Length: 147
Image (cartoon, rainbow, N blue to C red; front, top):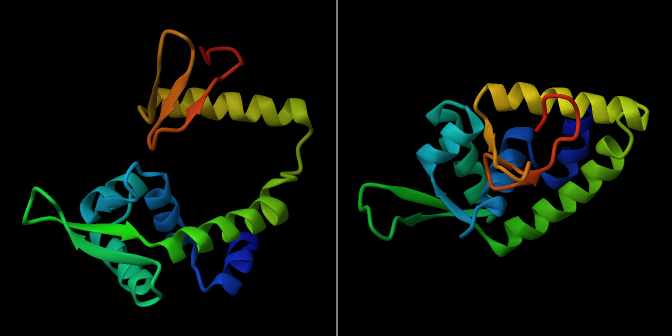
């Protein structure tokens, strides 16, 4: 509810925010619609709905895939990037800066979730201990079983 409240002034729902963030994290700022659904683990109809609304707002555009004529890409626009950055700043300040846990408890929680996500196949841990997460983010787990 706190996240929805923070996103409302931006005209975003959490699902549309997730799409914007996924596109902003991608190398080229674009992804096939099907891949968006897989990465966000949502039904294709939900992706289509989110892209439709983001497109009407000028935050995303549909473009043809450069090598596969059957595939359409969703590409974040400069306005979409700006809005996503502003929304992230508000979410960080209003929701994530103080999750309500002491530092040690927070670290233990992150380490436990890292182990669970690793075992579920969400990412791999390389030989240096760095973790590659689904969209290219790297983390370095520190707790038991995290390396």
